[in-house]
Image 1 (cartoon, rainbow, N blue to C red):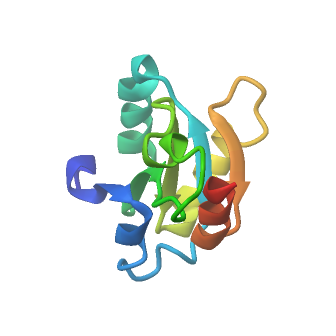
Image 2 (cartoon, rainbow, N blue to C red; image 1 turned 135 degrees about the vertical axis):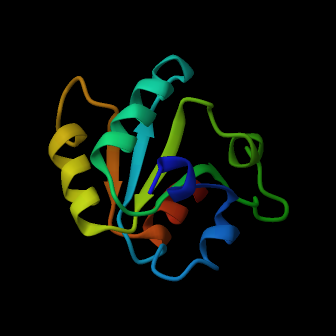
Length: 120
């Protein structure tokens, strides 16, 4: 199946909570400039078989909180990616996690861990 049929962009965290199996999966926090996205999309197309979810990190700020601008408009280079296929998670981890030149900044155990990171 072509990547365009397997990749899903979710704007808000709430959308992810409605997709079975996504919240329980590891969330990879990436620093991926626009200039490198096509190269990364090629990597995804050639090295993954399952569904891929992309979340920009948008969350709703708590009422009365400060610093809400970064919650509703995160930095454009930072994004989260979630793989529903365990082999895809492993392949991505071997390629990008722990690599000093890699794009992966952090790995979260699941969606709720990533969500709480964004609320800080």
